[in-house]
Image (cartoon, rainbow over all chains, first blue to last red; front, side, top):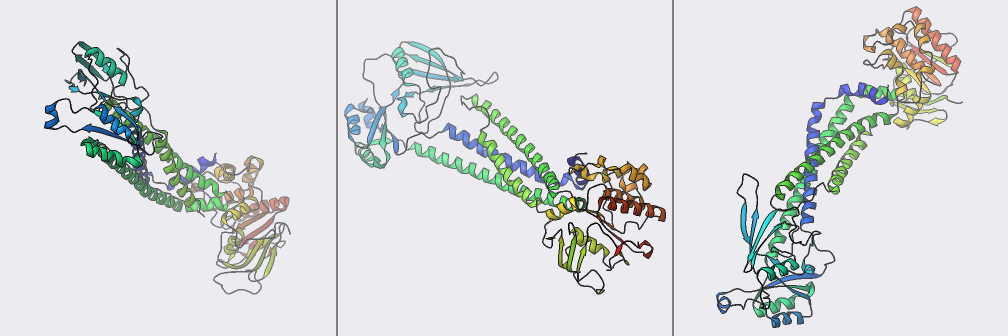
Amino acid sequence: MSSKRILHKLLSKTQNPKQLIGGIAGTFIGVLLLSLAVQIYFEYKSLFKEPKNDFGKQYIIINKKISALNTLSGGISAFSADDIEDIKKLPSVQNVGSFTANRFNVLAELSMGNYSPGIRTELFFEAVDDRFIDNLPEDWGWKDNTIKMARFKLRLTGGTGLKEYSGRVVGYSQRLNSVLVPKNFMDITNNALSPTTEKEKKGRLIVEIDQSKSGELYKLIKEKNWETNESRLMTSKFAFLLEMILVAVGILGIVILFLAFFSTILYVLLSINKAKYEIDTLLLLGVPRKHIINWYSVNIGIIYTVIIVTSSALVWFIKSMVADYLGKFGFNITAGINPLTIISAVAALFVVWLIQYLSIRKLN
Amino acid sequence: MEDSFILNQVKPNPIRIINPESVWNQQIELECGKFYQVISPSGSGKSTLIGILNGYRKDFEGEISFNGKPLKNAGVDEWVSIRNQKISTVYQDLKLFDELTMQENIGILDSFTPHKTEEFPIGEWSSKLKIEEKMDTKARFLSYGQKQRVAIIRALNRNFRWLMLDEPFSHLDSENMEAARLLITEECRRRNAGLIITGLDKRLVQNDFISLII
């Protein structure tokens, strides 16, 4: 008979699994919360990825103020070549780009399935040089008539005709808060649907500057009575709030895990105490202590492994449900669990298991 | 001497009235290969002595060493290792596992150590002690006398340098007692092991045993 079987025969009669349910459920909930927090954190990080090698650089978007006065005078809300030259003259400015707007109508249709009327909306596009985009997605670009994982239909109409495309969201930008399309798509479509000989109007500029010297630019903006993108501040506040919530959920998970740890270790110590006769007898017969310690530790380890597998499976399931749902609205969420989610669950339970192992090891 | 015990001024704590001729409070060597008997009334400290020699009684003063090594501060693992390799004991309460069969009780070490029960003549010993038909019976269904014989066979079923038996014959009839005593002394002689037997009764006294007074 194997040592495991004989220990099972001797030690398991002193176990009452009902008393263990609280500990297991608590451990499961704790690990699940921790995994979800970690997974959502990485999901959110990959959606709003901070640009790399971008320290010390700041991007400021400038508009002309729209007022009754300049609306009446017509066309004056565009930046002139002199304006741009003034900006470029500032020593802190490294690059200036302009947004190109659509000169055609955009109608986007989102199908919601067979039983739903769907959503239809007019949109405005903007395009900017790729170098100003903070989080350039891998599949950024376009091909004529390509239907690739289409999420919504685009109907573009201009003075010279109509074009239909399928589109999808490939990424999100923390820096640029407009619906961006690839620059070459915009140029080609503008020329095809609404050709013009006029010089392109530059309604919005994006300026790359040295962050430490941004004061000069703000001075110029004030002088010229322009506007900047204050809305980005809102995004950071939202991001901060979301991060705080995730940290809170993660900490809650760890706290629950910690409480469950006490419940589990008390159960184990109680079981050891109830099996005192059997354990003492084995030691008196000369059975090495490690067999008994290992029996308890391995059994807890098996329970914890099952908890990690089920909670990871549940996180995966929840994620694919959310991804499916959001996918209908054009959000593109990658499949699968982040390995760090599983690693953090394993690490947390390993620490708990180690503390339990160390307290069981004191048995005599 | 190899595998001998030395008790140096050992006495139970709290101290009781000590007979000046007793093993307590003096320097005494228990030599491996010699046979000892402790015959005295109940409550006189026989089990205390067995407990001290097995390392599970710590309520004593003085020094104990085994094979030249002081053991006063030895930990659980060190004692387990000594019991595993050197000492086999039949405790007064036998310490059988009620839920295991006679066979499983006897062969318990097979599961945990390299020990192999099939290298020992369990069948022969069981028939000498007239208990061979109980092999597959759970210990809880055995009488106390039968349990005592199972515990004796379990104690013989291993390598040891010392065999210690704490009132092993208390529930045996004289025929079984003689058979058990013969088996035990034969085995200890064959293996050149030390033997300590405790008992209550003067009729257990063996002339060729060294008497320890307690």
